[in-house]
Length: 280
Image (cartoon, rainbow, N blue to C red; front, top):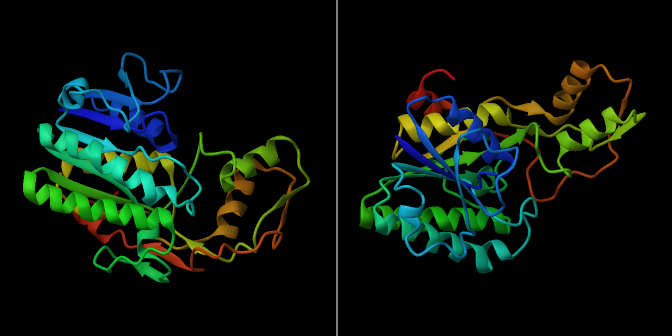
């Protein structure tokens, strides 16, 4: 099987490359704007271009993959920027349409839990989307466009809704990276919110493993939550990290206000993922 991965140098992309490299019967092409570096597994083929200006025969340039794991998206983690739907949505669709029209058989595209909007509780794939920020809106719009395109051109489409990830290589402003920076520099306190929010957290290595399995084992799965299926409070998550590292650092709870663009308690249903892949 031949797999191409866009956004390969990004947070999730790097871990997907490591996960797919463990499959010995798979040929991988890593795609990114930046040149290859230490993040690229040894011996893996790399193609550099910006999806807003792809080469004329992009499908051939990617080695005519059997499946594309599409992770590339610009401007994150600014979920509120209008560029997500004003410019980047059209750029994303044009790029993926080029590949589909050239014969791409299967596409797995990363979506977001923000497509569900401000709903609370357990979120199932059957719920109608109701995005309330520009990023979630653009992702949902791209999914709808691709569903029409797949019906016309016949490629298999899987839409992996990602929830809350953490791990090595995450953006400096993320909760995990801020915690690690504070602890490793001997900070006495770690400022954070009250921590009462319930979220669906999954380490990025496990997210990557599940994405690769979906791409290889369940083409055309439609919308799938890639999640733990378990509600965990932000405070409990951070306290767990603190226990692992045994840093003498206190949590300054309530230092930051809760974000207005997300509900206090929501998590994903992992039932469909389990049906597709078995116990994960």
